[in-house]
Picture 1 (cartoon, helix red, strand yellow):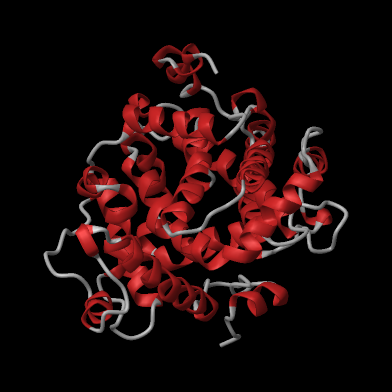
Picture 2: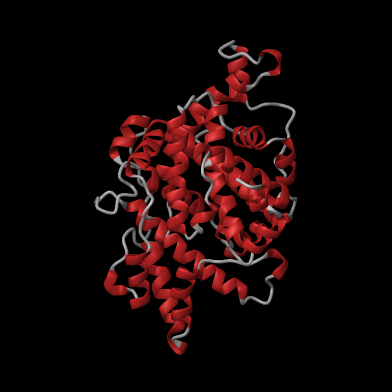
Length: 379
């Protein structure tokens, strides 16, 4: 990859670019004049409350969108299947990383965090957003989740729905007088790339830090699967990284440009940490989510996010050390954190199964074969 591809000039241009295919659907709805409020409310209700989208309830443009925005021609079913097998084995750790690494580094990008705050739900109802984000990951990464011919292909429809909701947010915020043009176009191509890298690159890096040794073809397959998801989500295909190394370089470049302290990012992080502790049972995990965020993101980003740097570790980690089950010899905390991650990830997934998404939304769902492999039970 040429360095010119990720120059400030190129990335600044991407901050002005949205997603024409989905944006056109929303523009068409707003062009209906007096019917716009009813049309938008109907669309959002259908997208949020239904796992499937009844074709007869949608305007013609929205129905056509769902038919036209399937998998890209270059999607490789074999690589997708292999990438999903990684999730099949390590799903609870992936969901833990989503909340202790992927989302926090999204919040560290000060300009992108402005969109998240203005949607309101990450602070006013963080549980719902955490559950819905985790559900999206389960939907796309479960076996068959991206197969348009399978009745298990909920992931493809989930991504299409999120893309259309992004277009609605983009349309409304860019016309909001309080939106600062210096933030860029809401949910622009650069911010979408940064988010995609947080779900792919950061997850792979986090798994490695947790002692998971993936083969080269598994890393490639995981990156490919998320590139496919990114394309369905509306990212320009020529922007997608060709491999993990390029993705890592892109993630670093976006972090250099945008990681900065802001009240919005810190508020989002506080809400996330509080909700993680709420979902984890009892008091044994008190303080552990914050420790993981600081361990994965590093002190600089954790300080940007206002993550507390407590001098005392959590009771759970202290207990391991007391009984000598793990060693932190020479200051190496990796073994301690690997053991903590195993317990916390399973407890957190169990908590998600108990969570209430609110309204008429279906509860958090994990396919039976994944629950059996992961050792989590119905509440």
